[in-house]
Image (cartoon, rainbow, N blue to C red; front, side, top):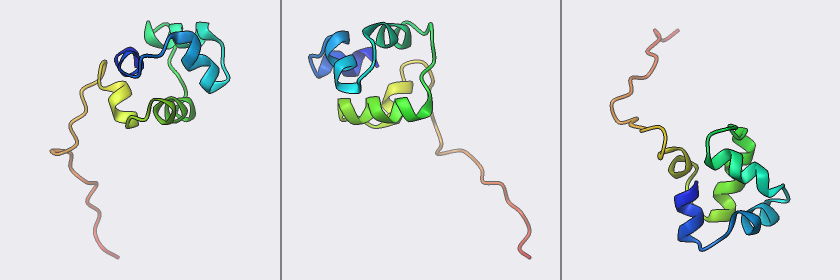
Length: 75
């Protein structure tokens, strides 16, 4: 999240104001002291104009290309 925020040239305070939350929450999210709820990740992604996946890719590498679907027999 920090990288996306820096790319948009926003301070923690500015991003917090856009989201209507406290700056300390942004700090906690960026330092992994607290995990944001999915709904907050969506709001942050919208504010930064980036995909949600890009916010979590700093800490989790997502590779769904090789993911297998749960194959259930047709009924």
